[in-house]
Image (spheres, rainbow, N blue to C red):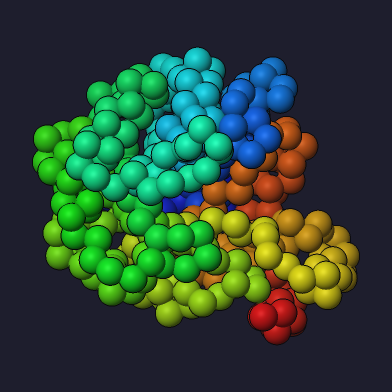
Length: 285
């Protein structure tokens, strides 16, 4: 079974639940080091699978390494329907920074690190992270994306995605190899990517927003709370439900290290927002 909210088939071998799970928060504070509560983190991963989630998003630079190692320890051998999406293009500095890592050696090494720590022969999806968190970084992404395309041809990667990209950079990537997903900053109040969301829907590409619950001003948060109260839901659930209704190819990967919040997030897939609530949420921008 899959969780409510359905699933999206991006290829014959790539069917992802629209409500997925992002593993970043399983690392310690600052996405650094092991989980604060390893038993709870392991329980979250087991519950993700038990609830029918087939879309697990991670990266070897979460921790670094500790999140992928935990996923392997808790879930391997992986359920046949589970698809693990990872990303490369950055690393962690000793000061806990996130410097780019886009050279050929960086990318090849990162792919092999993900393979080894996750314990798989091929990665289901690898996203190339190239832009900043707030907005894409202008310029060509052909050189690093071509490296991943070569690794795909070698059978180490099944599908490719891009993260932190502009419309033009997506087009450039598609000219090199097939792209199945885009992972950019987007939520109710951060909607610079509206046109790209619509493009992905037209082309059958997944659009996976990061920070789906962040960036709200105090006034926006108050208004969101009021809308949620009127629907008998939490603000988190309403924000996630709005995203699912925004586009048929929207995939969500909210992260948490709490079983309670995980179940709350998954329940958002059952929340159908009425037209007046959607209109009120649209006006929050």
